[in-house]
Amino acid sequence: MKTSPRRRAADLAYATIREGVMAGRWPSGAHLREIELASELGVSRTPVREALRRLASEGVLRFEPNVGVTVPTWSETDLDEIFELRSRLESYAAELAALRADDATIAAMREATLEMERAAFSGNTPDTVAVTANNDRFHRLIIAASGSKRLGGFIASIIDVPLIVRTFSRFDAHAMRRSIAHHKEIIEAIVHRDPVWAGAVMRAHIQAGRQVMLGGESAKSADQLRDKAARR
Image (tube, rainbow, N blue to C red; front, side):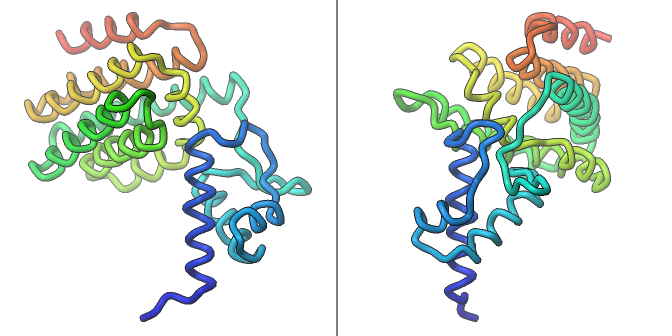
């Protein structure tokens, strides 16, 4: 079945706008206007409208009544809550993954981590879009390996793609290497079928991202908590 021109235009608009958001093209709170995007992309407003609605439904953008579609913005309270929930839910997902992940999924986790490392360090500057995409893939594989659809739904409801992009944009080389090292250690914990280890590293991993965005508990402290939990 052939794809209609309208569908192709909507898919193009979706991919282009999503990539722009992930690359940090627009600041938090920016209002994305249909007419401007349509002119830039060389399409009518209808496929742009469809793309914006789709991105809003995925949490990449936010629809605000009487305003329109905007790039999400977060208060300090929002950020603290998001990272705390992610820490608790994703650490549990990692614990389950350590018990349930199959070899193919573990291999895919390794591949995503390797691609993330290449995107971060193979060029003169990190490819933030590719880093974010492979980080997202890694975390989705962990969630899928947990075998819990409800848990996956809960986590998906609190993950803001633009927030993850913004977190990575603040990472220096040391923070990026630490993040990738956490991924590798989580994989090793899963390979060794050690749920306590996997969960502890995931908590440290999420808390390290929180520290970059908010300050507070340092990544070093998070890793110390990880080590303490892993020794139990």
